[in-house]
Length: 381
Image (cartoon, rainbow, N blue to C red; front, top):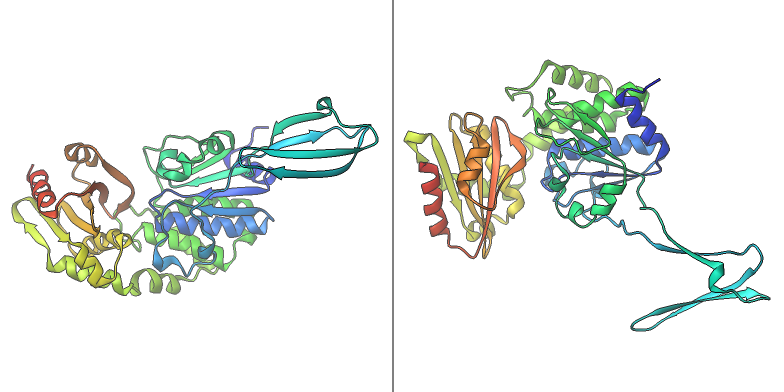
């Protein structure tokens, strides 16, 4: 009898020993928390699990169990295997020596010598049996982890978990549900359906954080009844709701607060167009002891505290000779058309903030004055 997709997912898990969970380069709270919850669940099934992303994990999520294990590197190179037929001739000794341009391996047999006919060569399989990809519209969203390991991603079975409507369905199995608010909802349903008793307090906390962060604590207009239901089930399973709220809403890093204060002080409003923007120089980042990782949280603070604007933009110079433009575009505006108006280099990030799509554009060795003028021209259009 044909298995449903949940049964197929766990059949793949059953056959796998080493499992990779990979996140997009733009790490979101929902994706990271869901990945850590899935890691804990798979560990209970005695699986060897690695969580990886080319991006940086948000500082306020470091309290989650296993957050310190997330890596930005994948060691996925195959090895050449030299097989010696010892059916007749028995191996007595093996040694090797290396030089600048070659390496030599010495095989000594007991009695009659080995010949080339006694040897065969092969390539071992990748050291990963299964890949979970969480929250990526396409494999390209994974950034350099995909670029540097394309063979791994093509040759290894993939389970694609996502809730974006433009997902490319690149997995052998695709857990794509565009009716849910978060990845955590998808995985929570799958894990509970498989074996709910394995979902402990830590796993439930990770999954609840994913739901809370994606729904902006259930304030997002697209929050569904399913999100409330799944959240309540996770609380019953022991999810630590108050701990989540304290870390992601009530505790904000001082560099973020300082940078947001500077952004507010420099805020400019184009009244007729319901547009606001701010400019942050490298001096602002230095005085706030902040880095580029604080830019998206600053944009999120604008969205949470200033309503009724079609576009919110930040022009930033986090380090010398490196400038970034970040736009939060209200759902009333086509993000795709807006991106096209920016020209080459602009991209829609794999992240929504409330009712806003986020668009980023990077520059090098351009003055903030010229970029601000360009920003104004684009906004006035």
